[in-house]
Length: 229
Ligand code: G3P
Image (cartoon, rainbow, N blue to C red):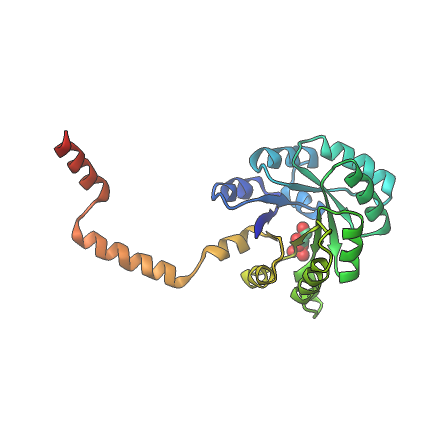
């Protein structure tokens, strides 16, 4: 499973890119607004940090405006992925952009039918929002299951399922069990994925026992190297 980070916070992106775990970044107009920067600069900086796909969302609601904005965004860097909403205008823009060879992420997907349409217009990624479905009393992970099932019936579909609006490590694990291609996670969820109390407890015990020996791996290596001189 690929891991994207769902933020436009440059400090967070730099820090988490350092882990070597990031395959891409997703942003949306709300995340750009939260970053306080202007979109063209923020996307350029993100693309310079992470070489994988970086989603930048159009804000026009008509196809022509979406395509005009997409041209500007796509010119920022070769790894920009244009994000369009799952509307008739967005799907039309997706088809044009895909025919031009531009990567497209179709966002705001809340049903299997919508996911089927995105695949039909050749979307590179479909973004079902699991957390927002849970928020209204539904089950977002069931939607991932449905989309994985439908896409797997058609080997010609190349659209990757990008699980979005993730709220917890549980969402990531459930989606991974189903074979979803990508999870875009907020920074706090990525950090939670590392954490386990038994890892911390076990490490503290190992280091405590090690300290009692007074040994040092590097010192021993130096002593041996000297002896061999
Ligand atoms: O980037 C789209 C999506 O991940 C938004 O998540 O938490 O605002 O529902 P959220």
